[in-house]
Length: 257
Image (tube, rainbow, N blue to C red; front, side, top):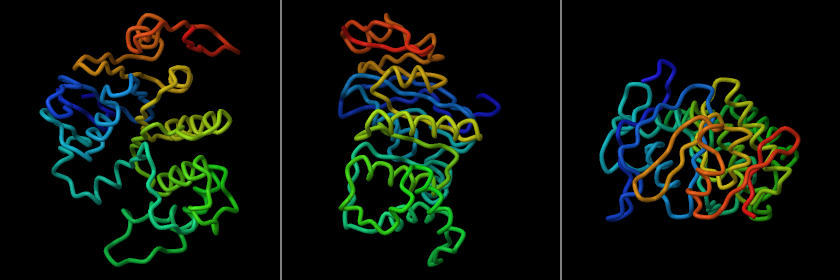
């Protein structure tokens, strides 16, 4: 295990019913790293992310936070270490955007403890960081899909975990906000946090991630630095369609002609 690893998987298997999606996955996710998880629909990206975040047990193998098996930790402790953004949001009962973000502070509160002014300040700062300053009183049910996505991201910022486990963080976002979110994730990693994100766009992964985990859905996987893992050949095999690489403004881009 890497000395600065914050999350490790030791030969884990991820199943969906009788299907073996990921077999014998071993990895260490490090402080300051962005790990992008890519694959076709149905190849196990979400299930693998949830397994790494402790939301479901692996079929076999072990996931650890530091040196501790994640399954042995209380949920509140896990939530202080790992924050999860789900692919599809269920806003449930409408609340204000501020209250939705303030929920992120709950793992840091003692039972029956009310939020402090410091917690409220953290929530306001989180809304501002995702570009939603002034939205505090807006009802979540009146927000667009993209705005709801950014509220959910703000709640994770308020939660302030060591590891951000994000399932398609740019879902519902326009190109401007997609770039803004990934720049923010890069800033988080630079500041010492860790990001694991499922990503559909290999161009975003190549630009912002440090390593990529490719999932093929039949047990096979590939892990490596983005420059090695994301190529025309690997992506064409991954997506079962021809993928061509190019360069725009010094950044690698991938398209399917």
